[in-house]
Length: 156
Image (tube, rainbow, N blue to C red):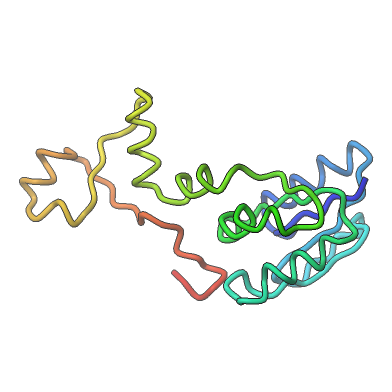
């Protein structure tokens, strides 16, 4: 069985590659940067995830694969949305689940609605003063971006 693993040069991709190889699978590696891993069956350098041609490129590349495992956070929503147009199954959640996980604020709201414990949270736009922070979130307070900053497409 051939498995196409995206982001094969990153931490998640390397671990997925290692696990698959230990179980006898052939791995087709994909990454935005050149990667040399001698155990890969094949390696392809991918265009940037934000490139409009990325999904079509991924579909063309996956033609020889039996399964696609995306590991790059910036591509997960694209891969989930494109599942029906891919030539092989993708190991990824539904578009709804990936959309929720992509947005840290919606994730916190969803977990709270399911009665799962999460730290107190608020959107910065709802906090005009330090008193608002104290009342709604408390101290110490940590500020995190709501969305992934998409490092692979020029973000922070």
